[in-house]
Length: 202
Image (cartoon, rainbow, N blue to C red; front, side, top):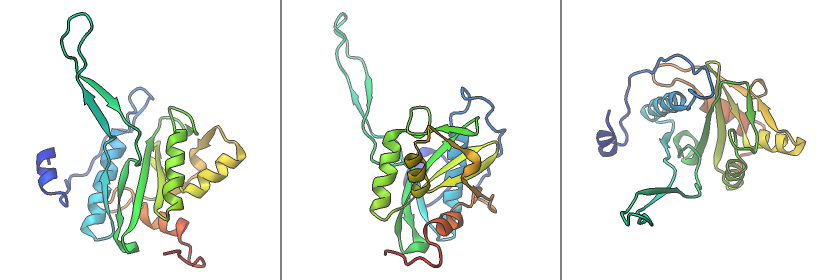
């Protein structure tokens, strides 16, 4: 489905499953494969009326300053501060609670924490802000054809310890789903954020 069709039909998603080799190096690991897998997973959740989740493009400003020598305008793209994570939407099965997901894909089982090249300090602050507002928030991390989930509370514990990086194996494993639900992370997130013995705030 092309971008124009997707824009006219926001509730429709491509049903074709992505099956590509896992990224091997940091240079080739752009995270696009994982983003496509999560977009397909979001399509599966929408079809089952579980959640509506959309990929969020970072906000940018395009300006055309004139070159000092030639006087010709040159396009310049400025990336603005992003108040969102990679995916945003509503958790239908949780009475429309806001749902935010940060997606990470690495070629190493270590993810730099509160540093560039990993989970940045700005992203950690954004995760904390939305969680304090009672949104359902998590980080999904793909490595070695596996995925783990990290809650804001887990990140807070790592921050309190002064961790410089996160270890993949310390996250909560996310199982593969069926059909378009490539990574079935919502049941894992529900168990982590809303255990049966805890009274939900909303």
